[in-house]
Length: 68
Image 1 (spheres, one colour):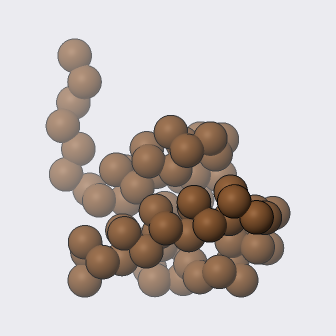
Image 2 (image 1 turned 90 degrees about the horizontal axis):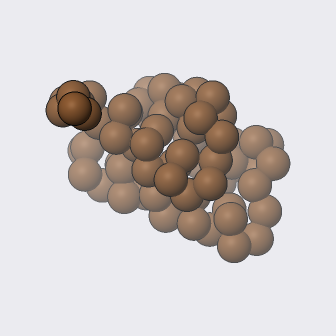
């Protein structure tokens, strides 16, 4: 049975992983997003480009919006 998670960073990491990002990278992005460190330049530095960059950026924006 899957345990309910209450930490929004865990949910973010899961969303990022479901979007095709490897688990470890998703985990570290989620940690940094929890500290408001993730922006477009951060994602570019992580190697995201084009449509993948836009998709990940939208997931991060949604996270920031929900956790203001």
